[in-house]
Each structure stands twice: as structure tokens, then as C-alpha cells.
Image 1 (cartoon, rainbow, N blue to C red):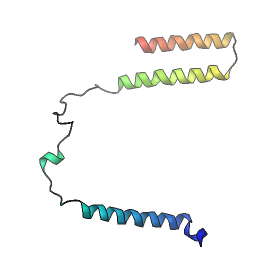
Image 2 (image 1 turned 120 degrees about the vertical axis):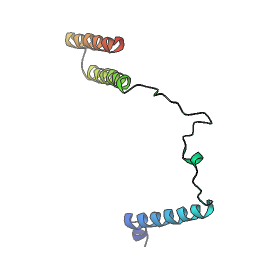
Image 3 (image 1 turned 180 degrees about the vertical axis):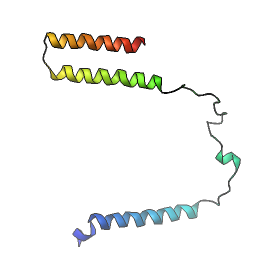
Image 4 (image 1 turned 90 degrees about the horizontal axis):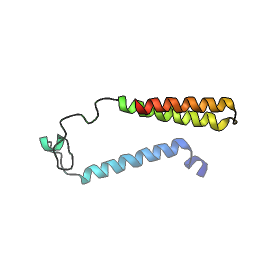
Length: 104
């Protein structure tokens, strides 16, 4: 009996029925819906919402994402290799690229 009771389809149906019952119970506890402009307005801790965009685009995000991608992949390559002249050249190139990204 326990093999059938704990089979994935039976457990899924049981959880769905439980969720429906819980949803119906919650709706019975909630008050009647009364839409108003106050409910549909933007809430910002009692302050008026900002009128201008905080960040003017995705460029700062992409620069930081590229910085961390180069940094992490560089460390991964350096960590999987051995110390040699080629590794030193790679590390120097990595520093140059990261410096260019930082200074813009």
C-alpha cells in the first residue's frame, strides 16, 4: 500500500488537491475585493515613486559582468595550469584587459 501511496503521480495529485483546498480556505478568510486607485498605485514606503530612471541603460551592468567573467575564467585557466613563461604572459594579458575594463 505504501508503494502506491508514495508514487509520484499519487503524491502530485494529493498536493494539488491540498493546494486547492488551502487556496479556497484563504479566499474564504479574505474580505471582499474592492478595487481602488490607491491599491493599483506604486508603493514606495509612503514616498512618491521616482520620476527619472536610476541607471540609464545596461552598459554599466555589462561592463561589470564582462570584468567578472574575464576575471573568473582567467583564474580558472591559471588554476588548472602550471607555472611557466606562457602562464606569466597570460597573466600579464589578463591584467591589461582588466585594467582597460576598469579605466574604461
